Amino acid sequence: MLQLDHVEVCYGAFKALKDVSMTVGQGELVVLLGANGAGKTTLFNAISGLIKPSAGDITVEGQSLTGAKPSAVVSAGVVQCPEGRKLFPQMSVMQNLLLGAYVHRRDKAGIQQKLREVLELFPILEDKKDQPAGSLSGGQQQMVAIGRALMGRPRLLLLDEPSLGLAPLVVKQVFETISRINRQGTSVLLAEQNAFAALKIAHRAYVIEGGRLVMEGDQAAMLGNEDVRKAYIGA
Ligand code: ATP
Image 1 (cartoon, rainbow, N blue to C red):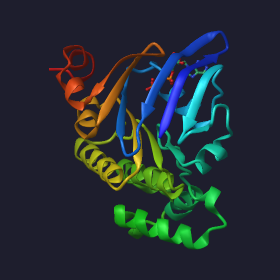
Image 2 (tube, rainbow, N blue to C red):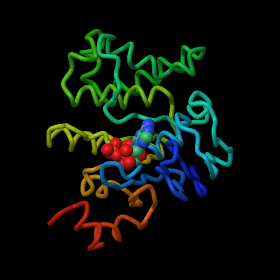
Image 3 (tube, protein in one colour):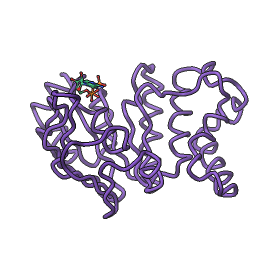
C-alpha cells in the first residue's frame, strides 16, 4: 500500500527525518511510536505532501508520490487526520465533514453515500450536524476530524495522535473506532503516545527516535519487548 525508501526531510540545516524506510501493507494497521519531537508529524506531513522530502521515495500502490501536491496525495487515496484535529470551529459539523470531500466535489451521489457511512459510524454527529464544530466536546470533535478524513475516501488513513487530550473512556472509544475502520478495509498508519492502547489494535509497529526508525516488530513482539515497555508503556 505505502512504501517509504530512504526518506530524508530537512528544516533548513536540521535533519528531522533520516533514512526512513517503512511499509504499510494492504489492510494493515501500523503504529508509529515515538516521544515528542521524534519526527512523527514530519513523517506524516512528508507522506501527505505538506513537506517535500530532500531525499528518498514515497510510493502508494506502486505510484510515486514523492513531492506530490497534497490534493494529488488525497486523490491517490491517502488522507491525513492531523494532530490537534484542526477543525474550523465556527463552521458547522456538516460543513467540516463536507470539506473532507472537496477532491470528490463533482461526485454528489458518492459524497452522500460516504456521509451516510460516517454518520452511521458516529451517530451523535447526526444530532450535532448544524452546531458549530467548536461547541462540541473534545471526543466529539475528534469524531468530526476522523469523519472529515473518511469523507476523502482514504484507502490509507494517517492518524496523528487521535487520542491526545481526551478522557480515558473517550480514548477507548476512539481506539475501538479506529480498529473498526481498519477491519472494514482501510489501511491505517497511527502515530500515538498512548502506546499500549495503540499496540493492542495494531498488526505491526515502528519506533522513531531522533528522526530515525530504530525498531520494528509485530504486535506481540512489540508488546513483549522490554525496551518498548520501559520507554513507551511503563510498568
Ligand atoms: P510531537 O508529538 O511533539 O508533535 P513529533 O514526533 O510529531 O512530535 P515533529 O513535530 O515531527 O515530531 O518534529 C520533529 C523535529 O523537527 C523536532 O525536533 C521539531 O522541533 C522539529 N521541527 C518540526 N517542525 C519544524 C519546523 N517547521 N521548523 C524547524 N524544525 C521543526
